[in-house]
Image (cartoon, rainbow, N blue to C red; front, top):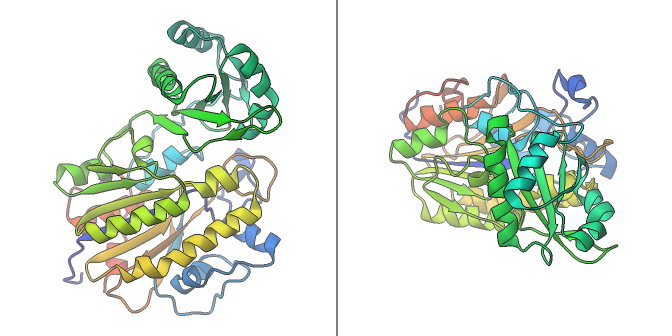
Length: 393
């Protein structure tokens, strides 16, 4: 191995930016999903010169991106070993934890026993209690919620208990309190996330706000975040990282308002953090454009991120690594509004290397966490195979 010492790693998750169906996509109803490629096809091509230079077009044939270049970054794609296609399981696997069993889902809504416990603990009856699109269910049940004060409970293809409430009816502080109580109720059932879904507006023009908050169960094992923090290294979570890991393993949390804010906060963190891990999630790809089937908005978001790369790359020096990846897919061109079971892209930039190479198809997202462990010389994770030697020469 090279004598270069890695001091700082920036890990950016483009939430839901998948790059092609996994072999088991049929089991999830996701055959034909390819978030990046299908968006490019629908729009006649993508213009992402910086991601293109890093090698994105070498991972998959994406219209508008060249595939005959010498890349500036190492490139490949990763398969998810965890069952499911949820943000939490995707991030946990990136950090080295692969759950033994899939988390429970509720295609017929939550059992009456859970709803009764919710009513008893909160003093509130509910409306809804079935799988639904978040924007559609507030359109359909929002007026009833305004008239009755009952929160809207719904789920999706993921292991989530979502609670939607108008901010004039149930203020944010009360909604968050209800979600915390619900989290305690659902812990014995293993439900992965409780999500606060506040909205505003009047019938016919309801709009979800950015005050969403996720309440996850803690990871089932030690993640790379836990290991780094225990070793005394800074671990900075930008965006919803703290929510996903139930606050564990972080020395600093930086909340964000949207993708652009997340990019700005990441750049600020790079400028003032000289060692350790900066771990960023850019959620708008998933929450704003993927689930809402906004192909043009999704492409514009990719362009916004691409435009930020020169500044990010310009802040990196010898001893740094930048890793760009995703946690699952959410193809806005296919039927349905749920996540899609896809490979995720892997781009690794080492400013000490003049050109990148093919990292191939990795068998688990956990290769990222294992690589981070190798780079910092801390205890190895239970899962994953490090690619550190492949990106340092």
